[in-house]
Image (cartoon, rainbow, N blue to C red; front, top):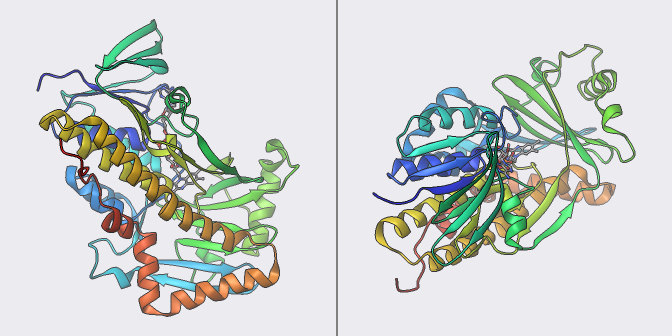
Length: 405
Ligand SMILES: Cc1cc2nc3c(=O)[nH]c(=O)nc-3n(C[C@H](O)[C@H](O)[C@H](O)COP(=O)(O)OP(=O)(O)OC[C@H]3O[C@@H](n4cnc5c(N)ncnc54)[C@H](O)[C@@H]3O)c2cc1C
């Protein structure tokens, strides 16, 4: 196929997924990444069933399942009163080949996919290549990039912005990014010491409510991870003080043991969705288009769903001459709906139940969650939504627009 490569800005998990899917179908891509190498930050740690199904197309799923841990249950606990709800993915056994959350770090995912694509003839991943600007006309997009050799200009039929939450591509597109930022920052700490040594029956994924210091406990192959709020007025330096981190973990795990720390990063947590996911020949996907709280493990997963949807449209546009504006309009409509009605809704619910300060309302939220979890019909519905199977079934992935091509 003799076409100019599609340019993907950002070699994070979403950009690299899109590169894999397009090149798998023989569509050439250039991936521009401002970093020097694939990002090694662990960040996301959960791959949902709906995502593993979408990744089967290129054969990635098998490799991921080999590397990850299968979390078969999700628990909701109260820091004082203990376990109040537990969801068992075995309820999804008839629905999916993957009745679990696959626990694996984002860095492992990026590495696995990068290794698969880096030598494909249709793939050109360029590191230290930062997208600074672009201009589009009716035939294509001219992208300005900064490289160690100086400024370069590249021409492409379509530019895809997968350049993360602070996306240069989105800012230049001039679309809104409405929403809010949680007032407290969240600190992620990892240690190889198993937490189930301290809390009996602890599963790999736990949401722990507390009005002052909620916790999100997660396991990945390399470590157990602890996500908790940094109180307002506390500087990063104080929050990251090793003694303070030990105290927080000792208090939560009710021990005087000390923990070797292999990861400690502070994040600002946002809930935002772009007003439009494209303009002309420039399209947004992943965190560049939507951000949410990590409660639910949906950011990276929904970004991979964006990439899956968009790849089908780009394949139709390039290989079958489909109308690109109709395809991108439909992409924007569907993926925005998923970002608001599924991802935002689920992550806000999970965040509210762990953070709620009002004792009476917190108890009510916990009772509601318990009611959903103890009824197999509602528990299954809840799991289908959380595992991102419902959004795929109800909204589709890459369904063609109704417009005549
Ligand atoms: C603590 C935490 C835990 C999380 N856990 C989960 C989870 O369990 N499950 C889940 O689904 N999600 C989770 N998330 C969210 C997930 O990490 C993000 O949704 C995901 O990283 C989005 O991927 P992306 O490729 O869109 O963006 P990014 O990962 O931000 O990648 C963007 C890439 O673009 C590059 N870039 C930026 N600007 C430019 C430019 N101008 N030119 C060229 N390159 C550029 C960056 O260097 C980067 O490599 C979590 C997030 C946090 C903070």
